[in-house]
Image 1 (tube, rainbow, N blue to C red):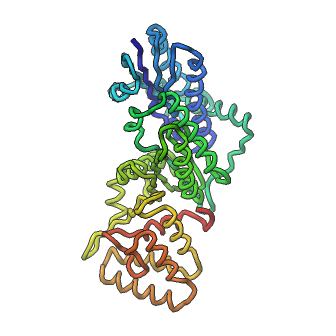
Image 2 (cartoon, rainbow, N blue to C red; image 1 turned 180 degrees about the vertical axis):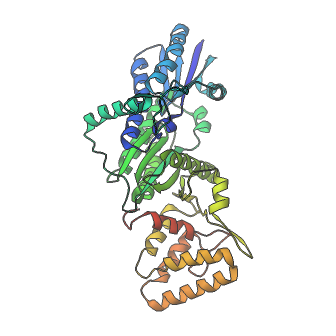
Length: 446
């Protein structure tokens, strides 16, 4: 009899992004990374323990010794919660014989049940305690709660090792982007693997890290989580789309090198643009939501991305954002402004074609300011909006400063029915997305 053990570290994003102070964010990400590293160091040379996965707070292990398993279960959760105040953990075990891959779904179900059980964090407070004004957690010293103290200590250790000066990530418009990327179809793939799960997990982790390293070259970004098939980063808004496109390309190419994956793996991404002072945990939440929307719309079959520029005070559900910000209702029709997702390779709108359209609208003489007026008019009157668009195209063609033919070609690459004269197809328009990118970037690399 063997034992399939799983652990899921919860509250990682909230732990990392509790504040907007970059030192604390980096320190927190180092603490999370050390959880996986310490786990591997503890068991990788143990002949009675097989590590199947240990990345981004998700751990799956096969134990052959029941006593060793029981000892680990008793000690592990306590050690993690003490090392990272605010993080909680779920653990589950499945007894099995044969191929462990066949029991992963059963383990996942048990972990989900455990996650739904309440857990008391170690930094809970009572009314007589003095609280950190930023995090509302009990202070231990110099306006620091225990979690903040742990993060800063981890940062100092990390900074001394790398000499990282943590230069500002925002562009000249004070805009940053939070990006979350997640692989597609692993649940269906794992039972069909022709190589051991532990070997596959290691190769997938290496592929993700290699893809990230290549895509991050010459980019102004900060790695938060990179492991397994998960990536979360904070970056300069100018670099967000180019990084994501390059990562998705690299991830597909690197995973093709894994035995049995000739076509490679696809992944989906969510990009949340925001002001550098905006609460990061809201932006991370939106990036995860957008990644999920991209997965749903692509049926988890193709690499693609969704993005949104945060303009409200907090982040609600995606449906609420669509209703409040991305839907235009006038006297004749309802038009959606969430034109994405944009795909890496597909007969659907691609990231490259979208980027080319954005670049075309940056040129001198571009009618982009007039198109903002067109969107505003679209809320009021469908007929007046059509007349305004006709005037915009007439004025633009007469000015001679901007080549509308180039724009038409770029728009038709996004969809063959799009043109400067027809910016709405299937009750959707890409103009809002183009305006979003132009409003958060500074005319440099996208």
